[in-house]
Image (tube, rainbow, N blue to C red; front, side, top):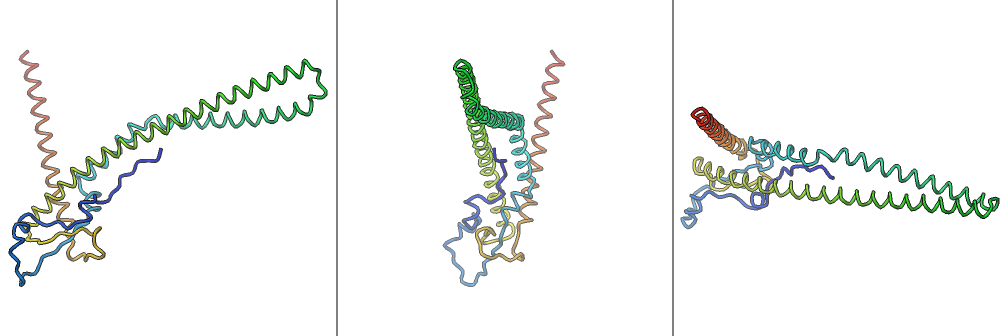
Length: 234
C-alpha cells in the first residue's frame, strides 16, 4: 500500500477564488472611483501546515493510518516469503524435470511412471501455492485500497471543516483590518510578501483552536466530576 500522505494544499474553493469580506459584499453597489482597494494575500498551504488545527489534523491522520495498517508489515513479510518459496520451488521443479528427461531412457517403465506421477504432484502443489499467493496479494491490495479510501474521506471531511474556519477567520479579520479583497497565493502568478497576512490568519486560527480545546477540557472535567459525584452519592 502506498503510504498515505497529507496533501498540504488548499482546497479548490480557497485556491481558485478571492475571498471577499461579507461587509464588502454588502457594499458591492456603492462603487467609489477614488477608493484605493486594500488587497492582501494568504498562503493556504502554510496555514494548513503550520496552524495548530492543521497540525492536529495531520497528527490524527497519521495515528489513524498507523492503526489501520499496523498488520501490514507482517503480512508483507509473509507474502515475500511465500513468493520466494514459490520461485525456489519452480526452479527446483524445472531442474528436476530436465534431469528426468535425460535419465528417462535409462529407467524401466515402472520407474518412469512413478517419476512422472511425482513431478505432476509437485507441479500441482506448486500451482496451488501460487494460486493461494495470488489470492493473498489480491486481498492485501483490496484492503489497502479500502483503507486509503477511508483515510481520504476522513481527510476531506477534516479539510472541509478547516476550510470553513479559515474562511470565517479571513472574513472576520477583513472587517477588522479593512481588507477589501483577500487572494490566495496559490491562485495568483505573483504575490508580494508585503501584502502577505498568512501569519495573522494563523495566529487567529490558533487562538480559536486553543479556546475550543480549553472548552473541551473543561467540559470533560465537568463531566468527570459529575460522574464522580453520582458514584459517591450512590
